[in-house]
Amino acid sequence: MNNSCKSVSKLRNSWRNHNLCKFFEKSLLKDKTLNYVILHRHNSQAICVHKNRGKLFSKKYCFGRKLSNFHHGPEYGRHSFMAEEEITDEAATKILREHEMSMVMKEDFDSKNLNPVVGFDSNILPSNSPLEDRRAQAKFHHNTDLGMLFGVFDGHGGHQCANAVCDRLFMYLALALLPHKDLSVTLRDLDSGKPWPALLEWYQHSKLPPGKSLRPHQVQRLRRFMEKRLSGEIVISNIEDAMHHVCIELDSDILNDAQKQTVYKMLKHARPDLAAIDCAMSGAVACFAHISQDIITVANIGDCRAVLGSRDMVKKDRWIATPLSRKHNAMNEEEKQRIYSEHPEFERGNIIKNERLLGSLAPFRAFGNARFKWPAKTINEIAFLSTDSDDDIGVGGDYRIPDQSNWVLPFYRSPPYLTAKPDIIQHEIQPNDAFLVLATDGLWETMHKHYVIQLIGEQIDRMEGKTDMNNADISASDILDTDSAFFGFEDTNAATNIIRHCIGQTFDGSSRRQVRSMLNLPQRESRFYRDDITVTVVKFNPLG
Image (cartoon, rainbow, N blue to C red; front, top):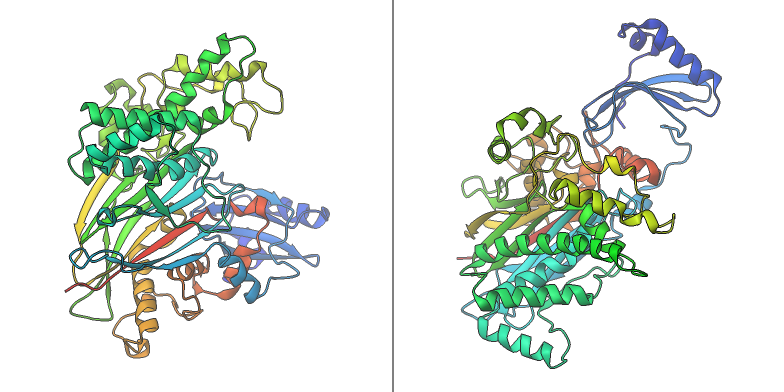
């Protein structure tokens, strides 16, 4: 935590209402169960008066992420900002590395189609409980010419939709890229009772929950997708078409599976599938990449990001960051204009409020989130599905159903307001392109893309012994005027290294203590300081 301090008296003098500040201080000293009060929040900073051994101290804290989504003003807390017992550096490293994985790829492409991917590093650092981020890595099982797939997925309002997208999206994409002849054979095999074919070889971390096996209705959805391709209803001529169609189809299937549950309400003794409703009512954003031969194709829905890292051919120790995705939120003016153009003029003042869709949702594109897509009548029908269910179940599984009147958002007049249509960017790999970073917004809201790319580039150079960074013309510390090497590069996994730097940032540099503090936060409070962070770094074979 930042040690930039003010005395309590100076802090009090900087406030308009001196008596109010005195009241807060007296409350802290009087109530032995209280340990701090946050007097002011701004972005990722907070002025906090906290108590330690009966005395008051004032500090400016950095929480590692913007706090603009949370309320401003006084907030009391019962945990201590100055923990009596801090975790050790070894314990912090163990936490950071719990979900990391690294893979070196075999040369399984033929000589004409060299595998552009030499390996990848990936890691997840949870903050939410349960974890809402997901990741997926796979290659095509029978046809290596089709390349490899990498994706990161960030759930919101629950983990269910992120689970579904992570488990099913690449299956749709594998079917989208199969030739018609193979599709016909696959359908015949399924009709004859053969098991679902192994289209993909997955790379899954053993400590994270494995993907669930396909349920019967999900298999039927995939069969229907194959039939649409064979009938010509869906025409796919390239990878961009495939990515576009699979995102739209999967989102439609998720919503239809939930909407179908209204039928069960009319059937006696029938019970709706609450898991399907969970999936549709929660949401997920995604950023995934298809890499084949020398082409990278990135599809993005929401505010996850993909950034390419390339070596500067003039200054060999400098790295260039090239975005391969566009964020779909209020920071993207084109995205705002797209939304305005799809709805009546009289709604313009209410569609985007406080930089959120209908004042509620930060990403402007996402899977699921049925409350932003269905007609109001359908939303109400789904809301009433749980009225005959047991009290401890309710719609959503993880929460009880709210008042039905709250399910339809204010100013909800011309749905759908949200889409799962992806933005797609294609890039031809150049000799100086070294790696691709896919990450959820837990990373990007805290670290600048140039800083991330420079850090990974420096790590690659050090591990390969190509340069002495003490004599380099530029380093990551030069980009943001911080000490980038406060840990050195003790993590061989590039994703873990980036996450360590991400949570270790403070206003006056970075520190091991900040890492220990961020990892030592109670689970119930961690989400107020940072989001789940998922990072995958895909490394390329040198070309040329």
